[in-house]
Length: 260
Length: 289
Image 1: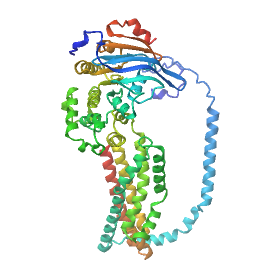
Image 2: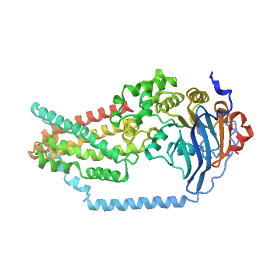
Image 3: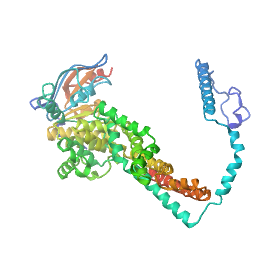
Image 4: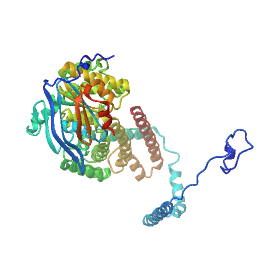
């Protein structure tokens, strides 16, 4: 079903460019510590899966990277830009190179798939072009290519709300691609999908990493999917790292310990 | 089965072949410690409501007996009104007046769309750029909502003279306040997910509003718009009574000249207009849902 060429090569290529470098990241919500000096890296061309129980800090890490929350301490470096040291404008630019895919997909159901994908390119568009008829041919054709990349070119003019869950998540990935990212942050991208659609979406993320050199950081709740599609697995427990190893070296005991 | 509804559940049922079980397991219901408190609070609420109504009856001179003693006056009034005057002249004037009323309601609704949309976006917590703008937009909306359309009509009649234009201006003002408030609430209630997704993709505020907020709430906004159109047509009728044109003005005239049969014809035309507008807006809202 899937042609995952790189699945056999277990260890990720540590000589590849580091696209995301999180160093000693800490975050508290009130008196609850959700991240304790967490450090991790995502390289170009690899899928990194985050595993851990609810509340272990997986999603918080991604949200600190894409800017939905601000961390209390620690450094985040995206494609060589340290967010703490960069100017606000550089910081925003760096964050744009990390595109987010959400568990709840977050497409605008009443807009077409193509119009939703175009939204990924808004940061390159002048404000006066903000309504669909003015998006322009350039953006529309780039969005079309992104839709084709996820295998949904034939559904371009269908309302996003009329697509199946798996198709919607692929449109959301196309929207992320239209952002011209170097990294995709996927926050439980398949939790709302049936097993078949979940497989398709994870296979797509894997292919994008291997073939286009994107870095993919995916929070997952299904260890089997992580073992099948990730090059590396990071285990989190109570906001701290418990292991960070190539998929082939992670033992079932290590994974079970995360949820105990 | 239903024939045994009054039987104690423990009573063994022997005479019905349909009931196989000979005994039903039961469990005594534990006493509800909050029951007296609940009963007490209901008594208090009802007592307060009764007292409020006594005050209201007193303040409004609410005397049903006056209706009975005044029944003769009403009978005279109705006798003069019936049969309604169905002469072509009256009907033509009535229909033309009713159409004016409809146009006042239509323009009062549609021309307020841009103002209501702008104030709704600025006055919705989720889309407002900051608290200062939010509070100002809310204050403007509250002002337009608080001043009744009939007061706006009286103000505009002194400015642009008697006639439908004053009515349109009055409705634009009041409707901007009401519709802006309703729209801003619809925008606050929308799922924030798509807005969040666009924000992380680097979209600016205007792009987020134009491509996530507005398309998501469009059915609600349209439904509220049709509802307001419905209300505004009825309001423009009342505005006619104070000189803002339309069939309301004709009704006022016919009352002042004691032509109650003409007035009844106008009322029947109004009834038809209101029913048509109501049915049309209900039909469109159903299609949108």
